[in-house]
Length: 337
Image 1 (tube, rainbow, N blue to C red):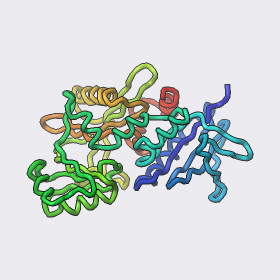
Image 2 (cartoon, one colour):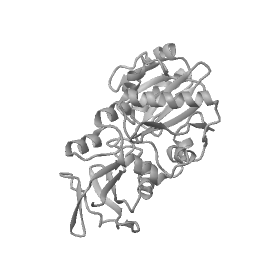
Image 3 (tube, rainbow, N blue to C red):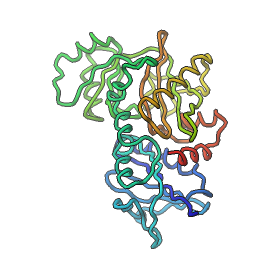
Image 4 (cartoon, one colour):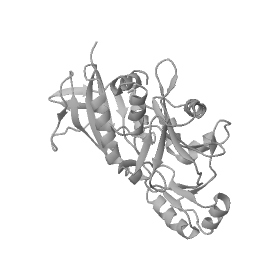
């Protein structure tokens, strides 16, 4: 049986592209080289190039700039050393567009190439925070914070006063389709609302103003292992900043407690709710779900269908806490998606 060719796609057209590169490189390094040939594709601004590869269990070969062949998008292949390699499977590690919003998934699905993660429709829904919350607002197993939706170009006169009246202060203003906290502002004064709207629209064409929920920030990942849904250990995120922003996430201004030091009943509930959200939205592959646990209930924050995968990211921490190896874990994802 021939070795399966795995294309790990990283980079993106969004502000998260550098984080995506780190996630993709780490993911590629952890895929079992004896079982698969691994090809690293850097995809940004329409240019898809082969950056590195690892074949036959050998060492990683990093191709020099200027000698990185372009990917043929007609059939998702590359010509390397005179040989055409058609990729059998895509592991998508693009944070933001086009890898997290369904565009890359749609391309691969039209070609019949299996890939990690959710299908194009589910990826599009979950990437947009407003759409995703709309699917969950009426369920009885988790709460969603009150919010107001706005599309760029719609009138904003009087919106600040309406938002304060409906949501109170503080509130968050955020793009509906971004990640890594780009464009997110915690608004404490009505005078700062319009600037927060401007910042959010710098990252996308739609935004949410959302009531701030005070509590503990917790996250849990779910995946399908071929037999059923499995939830990884819960992590609590404790940040030194106002919220878990880009600086806290990537510059060491937060502490992740894994497994979270929470009552067993709360841990079990978060794991069960995460599996129910996964099933309700129609997810597949690996998904991470974020929450705020307040004094009155558990509040849904967002779904991450392509969670960060650097060595220090949340999911790798969960995998280690579960007693699993990253290589075996990634094999499970690949073989069951």
